[in-house]
Image (cartoon, rainbow, N blue to C red; front, top):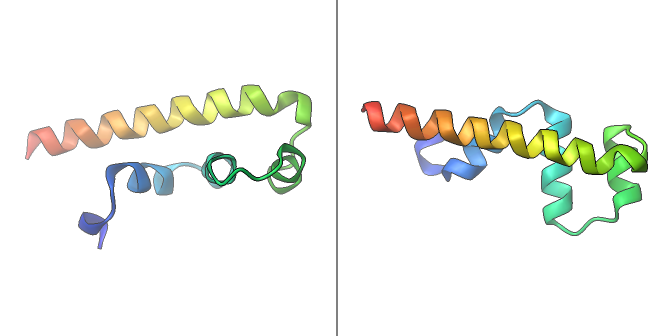
Length: 71
C-alpha cells in the first residue's frame, strides 16, 4: 500500500501526529484557532509550529527521495 501513496502523503504519515495534523488542517483552510485547539498550542506559537512541521516534512521527503535513489 505504501507504494500507492504519494511521497508527500507518505512523508506526512511519518511525521509525529501534531505536526502532520497541523499541516493537513492548514492545507484544508481550517481556521487557525481551530488548529490550535486540535494541536494544543497558543495561536501566537502557530507560525513557529508550522516552520518546525515544514522542516520535519522536508527532512522526511529528502529521506524518502534518497532511499528511492538507492533502489
